[in-house]
Length: 264
Image (cartoon, rainbow, N blue to C red; front, side):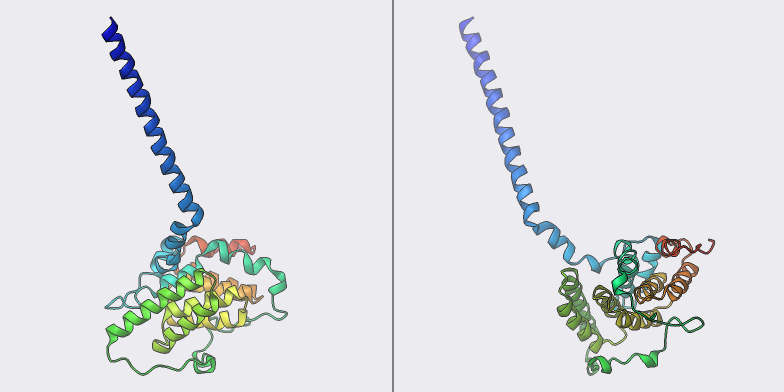
């Protein structure tokens, strides 16, 4: 029985050593994972371009990003960024309403009976210091340039580098004055700065550029609310519901200010 007992003891020792080795490897892997999360490398990299894709918000938000030009250039995904502003419920539903100190003494935006979308004659890029660039020699080259500038501007805006992002959005507007994505990016910057008058001016232009998308009207309503004009905000959100009856962000905003949303 001596050799057999020795073999059993040796086998048991090998099993114990193997389990210890597996546990050690698992511990090392766990430490590496925790370090990566603590450094923030993964989340930052993933979040830098978060504004590039389709917005959260449901079916209406998907429709807001559905417009495409033939080449799917900078205008192809234009309204996705607009919806990112309108359908960002966590940001849009709290800040303007809760910060009474930032509410203007006089309501900004249209009075009852006036056009919500304003007038194109009131929008002057030159007054903002934006001069239209000469026509491009290649539409494809311009589209690539615009797309890359917007990507970089979105990254900077997500990092709260608003001045740098603004400069890039302005460069886009000099190349493509009718860019909805750059226009939407500027709205988000002005809302972050609580500059309601500028946010309204750009949001009105956005709905003139893309009037069929409910998300743009939600964003317009958000700027009116920031400007202390809940009546105009309600009109804009109601129009969004008319365009997209089942879209939740618009209906929730209407309910939040104590008005009944239009029936489906």
